[in-house]
Image (cartoon, helix red, strand yellow):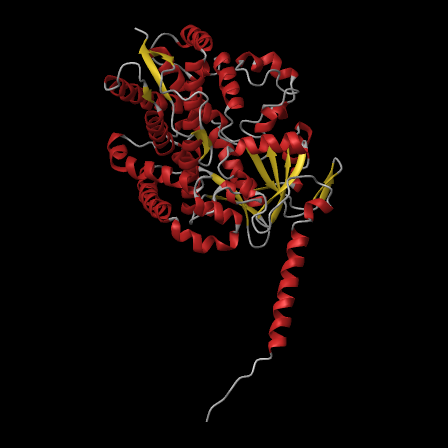
Length: 513
């Protein structure tokens, strides 16, 4: 017995026609969202939106061009998702602070997340985020902890100077050295010391594993990584694209296993909950003694210790976030000092006057280095390590005549603001004095946001500045920096995921004595 299936070709054509009509209407509806809201912006391409306009270009230059063409508020499409960009100080204040309750969700720029990293501050929101944030705020603003950070970073800084000396011995005359790997090593080792209080034996045992994790974690979220780019563009493909994230996944698993064992050993040696803030030898020690506010099933509030997975999530966040931003900031500062000798001379005089020619320096002395603060700010304005801040609109609203839809991503792009002549006179010039205390008091605090603003601003500002200042002080006390034939002018940059020198920084370093 045989069966034959007859297919009516007209029904097939009708079905295909309906599919085409549905897809067409969906595309038209999707890519008219911003136009219906009255928001200008570049014309999108179906499926990809406007992301193809970034291909082969400096991402920040694209946003600069869009600001010039479309103004302080415009929109663009990331794949199928419409988003709004603001380049205005008043809008920045409204979104980051004044209307925080409508924009309290922070977007994650890391598409590939592995447990327990989903417990990190950047991945959570609501009451849970608020309670976890309170613990980290106390930790990262503890004077006792910060004083110890200074001393531990000095140890790493001395090792950095030794490594630089070895590099210089092997450098060819007038060709300089690429200081990036030395700075990377300094930051990575320093983070291990201040977060985990690792001794020399532990550093020798675990440094490579943690350093490789830091590199892999940041490459996983790099704008140059095609797999992560596609995952951001088409989130539904993330489980499939994770297969290409093997190196990051394996290094993450290795570091998490190291941390689980390390936590057990630390807990065994720590008399939990009986240490004062100043008695803690590391950020980890502080976390293990901390209590976080939580809500029980019946709704009542109580305090509990952080779980092992919560603690590990915070530590991996320190390892990856502190590494990428700090090493980039230090490299950019050294580059600008090499290019601006008069600034280097002023900085050396200030360091010599406040911290001395050599030897230790204190947290109080670091806080007195006003010119170094100005230099950091001006360098950051020229090379914004974090060029923008993203939030998700939690409820539809209208602010200053602009309608924001629930679920829409809103980007406060600060890098175009830093090039705005109305905010910074002669923006192309390198003038640290524009950030003198009096000038900052007279300017809008939302015109310059190196650590963000509002409740979700970066909690690690003081910690980051200690790491940056320690490296800069010790380098400038020992070396005069100049450009060489291998120095890139202007410096090529890349988002990996923070803005960083694309090919490192090559400069000449000459002993001061």
